[in-house]
Image (cartoon, rainbow, N blue to C red; front, top):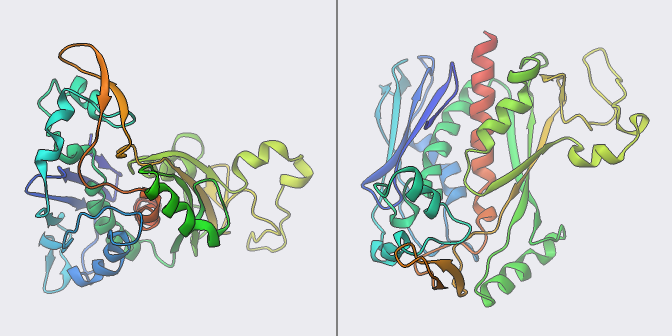
Length: 326
């Protein structure tokens, strides 16, 4: 399915080289000030243009076609669309016969019996995240005093930000790609959101985060490092009646419920699978293994554009939990 949420529900649609992509946002309360201008700052953060990002240039101008009247939400579903214009679909004609390693070409062929739009990755493309960023703008308005901030903390295996440029330059020179780790912090989220077990805050956020293409892992607080600590080291000493803790190894969540401290989680982003280095695949017509050269416009490091998307999906999750708590 292409929808997420119970009270604040987001549905995404479109294909990379189709007429348009976008999102439908249902469950937004009426009377919230909203316009396309509100979405522009986050959409600008997602745009390509920096070294290591795709040379494909799109206006990425949002158009709200329902759910807003006289500058305020009406309570009806909000529909936001983005037109596609800069496409070179001819670069992808061979992908139904020669599926790309690491990409969704082969599974899409099998799941949809060859009827899927394969151009530019179709519905599996990172371009579909435009709708998520637009929905995230609305979600941030619903999430109360919560503030979302994300940043790249590791790129190509290094945590030294001074080396990030050289890592990207090296990947470009080698016609290859690199991955990274994005950290997101949510402050101002009150204690008490979430439910034990299946609707834990970790579960809901992770569900949303894994909707972002290229995400392969999520950890909260100390994450996997907590498995290497003793209980005396991992426990967060409580230092205030408001639940404030001395450390935050729990990442702001205990028992699946927010404890009032900052929610902190990190996301592993894999290297872009579409690289211009020669690779091997299997010809789906002949059944023979053969070489593959990928054409088109691709990111050498998709992690560069993902922080704002992680913020958006986290905001969507928190907005849904906020409305559920009411």
